[in-house]
Length: 294
Image (cartoon, rainbow, N blue to C red; front, side):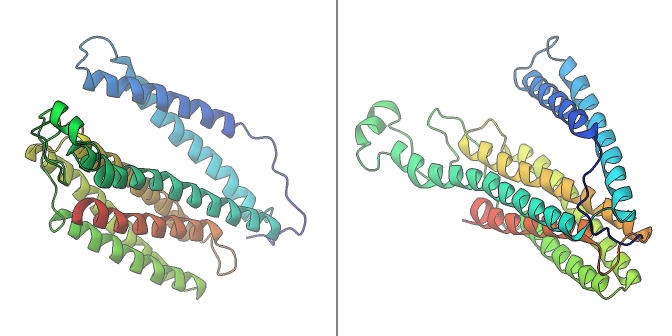
């Protein structure tokens, strides 16, 4: 690995931001049409949505591969100065902060619904007349198993697969922390072993969450069965998507560990993946308590 430059590095013009924007557009258009196709039970219209979505996914994979390839070459070539390192760290911090706000909006919707909307529909406060006129048989409870319009759903308990997944994520944070300390101590073999263990735990988590969704649908807990089902799948689904992205992040840095790209002094890409993974773990702890337990 070349020595870091002392000059501020200005990257060359890159096509990847534009190409990434096109990929995101394909994902948005394809995803929206694909969801509409399945929720509206459209037989003929909307079938193109799945094709566009698949193209968008493959497009983004290609863009990420090429963009990361260029960034890795710059880093190994010593083009990233210490000032560039600080810029990367600040960018990652702001990115994680934006993710905190992202999930904060969902938690806000959950608490607002649970502590205000549901009691109001049940006649709390000055809403007794609304309750009597519109939904006299509605009972305010949480989880909301019977919606005001009569639709029913089921609730997912905390002490089955969710508890197992919580233990898996907590263990993955421990193994990743051990790998981080090994990287700082230049113990490459230990880094490989414990980061591989973290990736395996991440894949197990994703598999168990998919199994949980299958179990939920068989129970009658679906995304269109009322506000509880909508919030459940919205919050856990987005978290699962973040776990998936974090797993990809760790696999990429793991391959770079195998190639010997990191040193105790220069390994921020690895460290950024660790920050992201610990963030995902913390979000899951809040989800477990707020969505499954309370």
